[in-house]
Length: 373
Ligand code: AHE
Ligand code: ZN
Image (cartoon, rainbow, N blue to C red; front, top):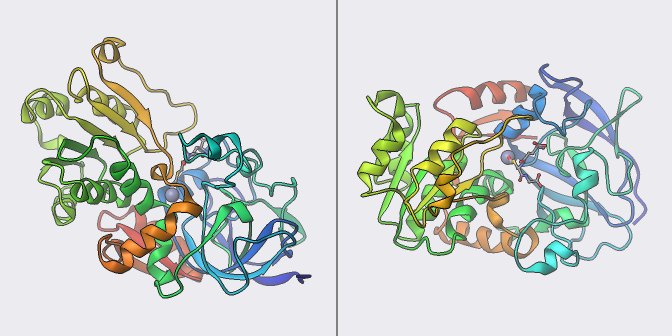
């Protein structure tokens, strides 16, 4: 379908470290293999703030951030056959082309089709679809959901049941899927002991996944005491506030679990916490899954002996979930009540107040702020 440029509102990040500006932007029609989406709702994730801060090594400006959206397909370019006009969709920052080496490997949800251009803030053909005040504006994570209209690769979008609330299911575009998937897709997690560091949207979703897998102990760790109630509501059996301990959190956890955890998850992005998450793993078999995003240049360290003695350090992106293949199933789990989603939404803002939404996110009582576009 031959489309026209759309003029709409978007939150533009002109430069690092500055608040977003609500601007009138032009959104060019989708080219071959691309999809233009009317975004109705978007969550705000710490990664948006991280890139806005300038700490993301892939950060480029000016840019339209946002990667946890939900919307309706407005138009499609030539050759698009997986979604059609009017479909309710979730953009996918972890694409799935179903034909690259990664997608065909059966070993990972990472996809090689669009990741290189995505990291440079451009569409797969190397150009951008956004302009504002005569300047080209970059895309973000292949999604740019802080715009009323966005253009994505056909590999970076999945249609979902239109009966599911987009106001809620947009959260499956990042935080909930990232945590829940990381837990439920971990081989051997059934009935085991689990520790979760960082109790935000991702951490609570890990807890939810661990509960779904009947884990015998689910220990939540956060420096914010308000997170205890949240963690227990989602299924944590124990809560630890490291600032209230006399000794080290690692010693405490090892003692609580007769030698260490079977599985641990970092949802903080703090490299010191990542080390603790590895070192509280049980000798011989404990596995630490790193999920949090650390600042550019940050490095993890531990004594190699920790690995020699059988602890495993691994990581995952988007919960190991293949978006086009698996997200409709998670939406169905949401609709059937098996997967909690509504419970994560603590704050709402209109697009005009998206900067307030970032402030909300930093407040200790926020799990997710959903922006009505
Ligand atoms: N651009 C950063 C990396 C950021 C990163 O690790 N992103 C996570 C998703 S964060 C969602 O809130 C991820 O899934 N990464 C896998 C990928 O392919 O980007 C940097 O350090 O350069
Ligand atoms: Zn995110």
